Length: 295
Image (cartoon, rainbow, N blue to C red; front, side, top):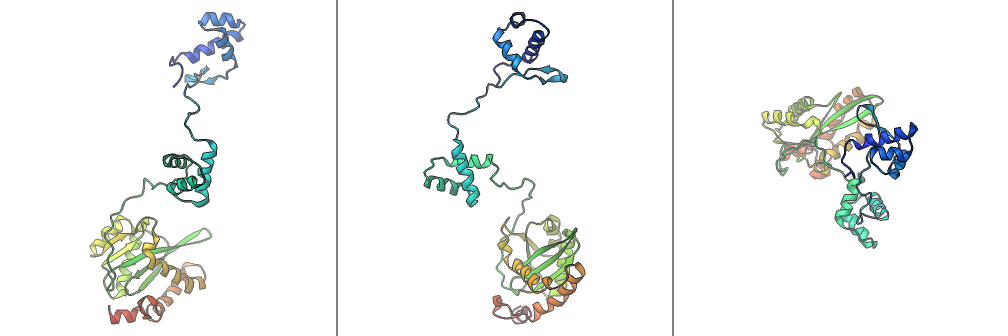
């Protein structure tokens, strides 16, 4: 808070300076305006700034204290920041590590310092919350189907590969796309249903915009439930993430990186993956053999 709330005082100070510069003595100007000559002498050393309506004034300094008697020492703040950057651990762990080093500081001070230094990640206020149903146990084909997209950037061009995998049977489907959105996602699911030979009961995806509310609503019209994984927990979609790696290592990385070559390679790879490739997770069966045996 300023030591004076008088809104006219900045203009009065500037008037005193103007009078002195016009030839008045400091004492005469001080007496004329009703201030001490020491104050006027200090005002002469101040740099004017532009106030309202472009008028030069000498502003009032804030009387707010520049330091607090209980504020953290710079050495303590540096120790908190360095410990955070070194391990990238949470405030509770940083606090405990500092105590082991003999630095006495409260947990609230550690959290406050990390917040002021911009070292705490917050959930985006624009991130929409998605209700997720409980994850079912994948016993039969279609009980739980995971879906994802792989992004490719070639020069200034970008294209994508939609991927889908049934957790129980390991049956998979994939297709290239120039762009990803909810409409293309729904179209991809319908194509996968046509080739699968079994119905999908639940589809699980991440929180990408291509799997948002419109996608969920239209899956419901197909009698398919939709659930989202936990935010920043890609391991929840571990089966499809592993398939993404497999299809890149065994297929896409061996051909030219363009949309046409990728789609041709995928068309040749999927029959091998579903009909011939042995899978340890289903007791060395192929997805087709598993579907015939258990389905």
